[in-house]
Length: 369
Image (cartoon, rainbow, N blue to C red; front, side, top):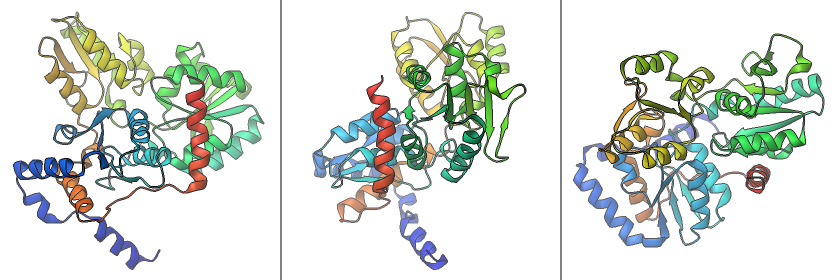
């Protein structure tokens, strides 16, 4: 694709400035009008980390895999407007039919963690690791990864994992091979392996930039190889945040997502997936105190939904996920008005060969949890 074509493509996919001048009331009314007009032909999944201005119009809210599976089950939907980030829309496209169109309201809505493992880096790493360890490694990838990485894992006998089932999937992986390569989030991999009894000194880190293994000791002792990737939101919860809560609110429960560092998870009272966090707060008694270590849009929504509890963010200076926040009311309306006039904007499509291999990885997960 030449530069002129790229520029024309970007121009075509950019939301017109006029949407920024429309009132919130006008935009909300138009979204409702279009949703009513299209009925079951239109389906809007919304991730937990989305802004309230978008979540209010979601037909289903959940985590990335939940939403992709819900989209796949909704066979009546011709248009699936996925309010999340790029890798989530990819997964939805892979699980839905060829007739269904998966749309991302803003193509800039990516995931920095998913982008920390590209396929070229992964292929290079795999060659180096095979040379070092032979055929003893099974790759696992967090669903927060690109379709190409899921396909790589599927091709090499591995599976995807979620933050809810990572423990089961790591245990399964060790029944297949004696070592695992965990992509792309080192923290989820480290926390999960530690929870099933793997000592930290048997875990190494693969640095994709330097293209080398980071480990002190005899490499034969390594059983877990962690990709050097992370969530930029969850890595900003720190030990100092926990120390502050313990000092100022000693009776406050601390609950965090396992994408946080090992040190933070180790010092917290509870750690688990987004669903785990939501369920824990829902089940908590009135008057209990909670500091939550996860994305700020979700934390604020939980606070608003539980006025009978004292809830704060573990890091009071935390910002919402910047890429998730690319999806806003104007972009949602722009996408829907495009559908209304017969123009599909920002459709996400995944190559058939990649889809076949990636679905292998997804199915291995579903078969083992």
